[in-house]
Image (cartoon, rainbow over all chains, first blue to last red; front, top):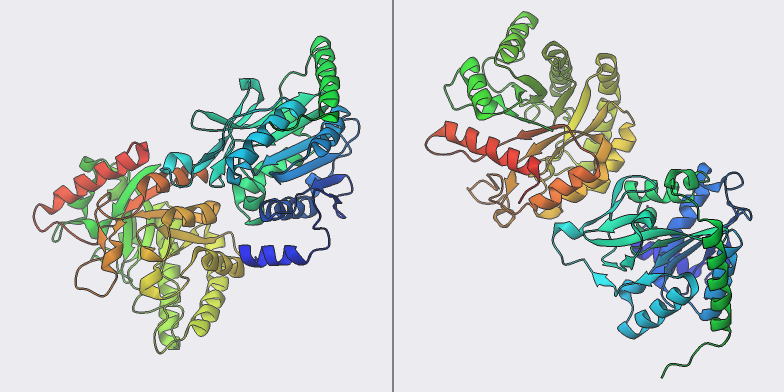
Length: 254
Length: 279
């Protein structure tokens, strides 16, 4: 297995290193990885790419998936632009299954605030300020996933807690929800407030098990949460329309 | 999880049955029996005599957690001398036979000793080859061979990744790791060994380590649980992470100078505290 240094050096040579380019995995035809051009995102993308290319169930998205059947993974996100957020929201709304992994734990306070505001507008995510957990005692070593499978997974030094309804929570660290799942339109957003991709790349057993469950076609069933009502769906559509208007004319920072 | 400790932890001059009674009173669930250490369990001990020992364990209200091996240090499967190598194989086969008689499903071995004279590559190759054959014996008997990580003492398999590669090369579900959380010293972190090896862990040896002492002085590097440098909360969480629910076997090297039986009680209490996860 490559070291982290070898792994990143390999990435530097890869032709797909583009700023938030939609990189189609050759082995998994219906998986798109929207990565950013920084080491966190690239490292995580490599982990997810490895997962979907070697894990046969992870490439079977055709059945049991939402209408469009597409899985989009946005790893280690720190610099998402409003237009990319809009495109991503659009894809979710029309049926895509999106795994959005936060890399905000390593961002500056200003960057983090900007992204937090954007993610709230785009996806209704209510993120709390990122927390460094690396120096904390053992309570902070592992993130406890309760869905789609019950596993403990190492935190990635910094986490982005998220405010959510308990029915949406996938993983917690102490009192914080860190990973959640939201239905938006016809699609689903999985938000990972602690990076999972690097653990996959490092072959951490439990990280691979959680990620495999998140990307396999029957995850929808595993989550076992009620789908939103028609009334809620209408509300979601309205919110989405408002958001599209909002990102069309983004406010300048004061 | 269940608590155990070795019969080599019995106070000196204590009989087998008195030792078992002491463990029971101290709250242990089982005993680890060491081939080649105490007089009641040697290579020449017959099957009938082993059956008597098994009976005594049961009558004391205990189980045999596993069968360990005190002879590997003299005669190892990695030795150049064919006679020593054959003897080492025979010890391990006897452990497997004894495990069946004792009704346990795991043995502990020390596989591979690197010395100035016997170089690393040679030891690696010979050890893997020997374990390929022994794995077949283990599979037939349905007894798992737990290769202990005696890192510093063996000068072999010093990192968890290397140990994992070694087990990959042995390639048998009947060969895993008997993980000693005290043996890692300052070359790593026991909790990370637990995470990496997870389902391949056959048993866990429990002791604490004074990392700053190293192995160069006349004082033991090992000490009582909670007194040394191991991060016990992290170790406990790592066990939870990998769903380890098997035996915790205390292995005390440093002994109380007085009231030797008290150390057996104190160690049992420490194991209980470790299992509870309250620190």
